[in-house]
Length: 477
Image (cartoon, rainbow, N blue to C red; front, side):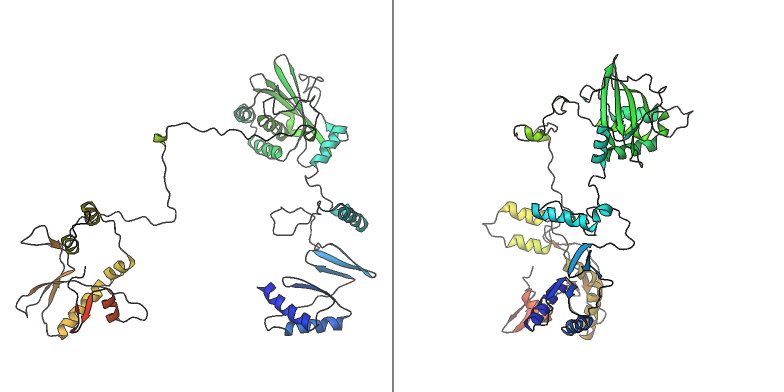
């Protein structure tokens, strides 16, 4: 709405030549370059007078700097340069990509000439020294440093790793035994003696988080005397200037025999870094085709193109007769399951006037197995039944019918024909007439906004109108 309003106002000001030579706007934030403060104040008054709903405020540059929607304009001589604008409370933390704030990272796509100019501007302004961020949090850089030996590697004590081989390790992990989560849980939790009173639930959770954060840099494997020895380099949780060396011994059946880590908590072999390594082994694919060997050094771009074949979907096989198909009706009221088996007077009339061409099956289904549910008008009629009864008694008293008795009744069956019956609303006894017994049928008439009661009665065929006037329709169902 603000954008639509401002577009029409800007078109009017442009026709009247009242816009500055440099004018930009984003929704309700405007940026203009004028000669002096007096010209800016005049333009501010022009904007506020353009429409009664507008109430702009003005912010001028201070010390040659002016913030505007996530960027800061700096006046350097006759040129205006831009940079990222950060408040004084900014901590330099990275925001999630779904955050409500704007993306603060520099774009890495575009034309080559523009990318070069962008890099030169960052270097010239000095932004790269303070605000340059590694997209993966520095893991790739640390992995490269560890590969060339630039990171210091913390090793466990020599006495703790005497049982582990010192050489012969390979990066080929295809021959490593399968490790399940149950094995991991048994080693970290169940195998700990209760006398030691060691809590291993917290390292189990933290190790899973470290594994998901890719803290495992390198893994090496060697097999000797029926045992598998695995050596790995794991990043610490806080300090990233060094790596910890973890040693794990696994049997051929996948049971963890012992583990050692160089961290202070790894003396028992159940620290966060050992758990991280075990989670990595548990998720490692065990097929030779999916894991490249160290002799296969060709990159994916050097190999021939091939189609990506998705895995086959495997589900439980069962005959179609055993399958159940349900149609779910969400957010819908359940239908009332109260079948009415009574043959009322209206139903009897419907059967009496039925044509010979009407299907008997259809007639029986309609009369005996009706699934009709009370409508809104029927519910309102039942609620106002007592009020209608009081109005009826008052009207009859005005007509001279004193001593009128109205009582409730059930289903009335005909004395002469037992298959016919009716369910009237009330039984009436009027001692002032010759035949005192009678039936009362009450109708709650719904009228439209501009219709009268007479129009509603005629429209619903409750009453009919002829040359003699308006009278009740005795054939109404």
